Length: 227
Length: 302
Image (cartoon, rainbow over all chains, first blue to last red; front, side):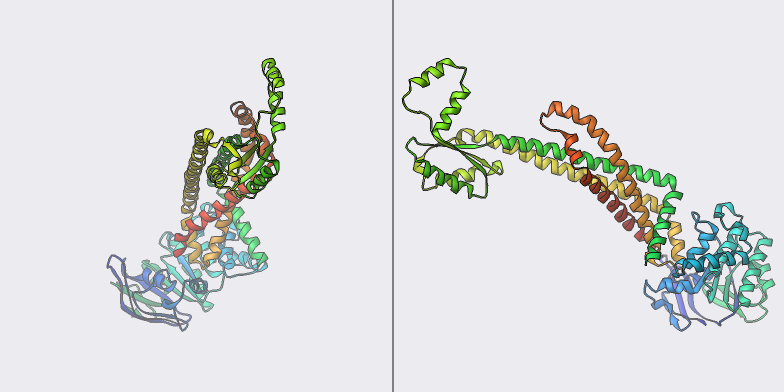
């Protein structure tokens, strides 16, 4: 369960990114977060990984108020969450295998476990042939699938996807979303922030529309992209 | 723990190899910095040899009256040797002084003839005093002046040599102070150059560091391989610097020997080769690790 209670975020330049926001996301939900640029979608995701702290309010994930976490506890929170970014954020000097392995290594996994699990996940995202390739040797769609593999490897309870299809063509975008839906079927909560109307309408699950830092519409079922 | 260390070293080494151009550049700059340290060691060695040589040439002689008894002179000698500033005291008896005088003028028939005319030894017994440092002669002399045996002393040649001693002292101090200052400034420059080079290398990888943090890497987990990488720059730089340093010293040594007889750079540095390599490794690896640690800190705040 993820709860936002009266959360406000004001940036240094006095821009109000989130304005007294209240929101609840249950375990296992697939939530599409839509809204114009500057509506606060990315801020919402960044708050959940503690990339930024809220100016006011509480963000509670599984009963823990993450605004209170110490610097040492932040990596532990991030290991519970898988994050996918528009610009992939892959480690350019590491191969596909090493990029995924890194997320396991930081959790303290044994080398044998890493050797066994990484090829399995790369197989799931269809990159078993590219295991030794470096990101610069991959297409946009492949890079995003690699990023998904990295987000999945430690079996997180929550996946956050910030515009994951922003740099992809339609075919690759559908591939990525299909993967996210498959992950969701196994019980993982997925929060997808996107501008892509077709994708949101195709998913047809809960859709939260944001504007100027507030939730203006929350369609719990069969949601559509409406701005 | 063992597995973690192995992993950290493995990643550090892999990063070092994969960033080959960057690693080569950083190692090259650090090797130059270490050579600069080597150069400073050469300068310090030469200046300390010069200072030592100059100091060794300075002494003070105390001449005793003809009637001073040897026992009493030996008492003074003992007193002087007990002084902390005194390095050595040599006693030259009247007979020894005459013997030396004769041998020094063995070829001078006139002097030899004059000496044979004398019925008594005209020379005085003396104590030759060397201080640990030339600045301490004044203290030693004032100690003698206040000594109960002062009436036995005919003269102390310090007063004739005072100007020379002061000059030597001035040059020695100058060499020491300027040498220290130059070392300090160059060492600071070297440290800043190393730090900035490594900072740029790390800056180049700041996005990677931020990503590692975002996927849940703890501060130490992300940082440790970079510290290894910094240490590797230092390690290779120290090896390169040593390989370049010794042939250079060998070439310079023969030229320096012409200007400064009695100083052999190559034999000094060959005799201390283990310490030299150890020092280079300590400075190189230390600078590399510390610079990496400082440079990476701000990128870990994500």
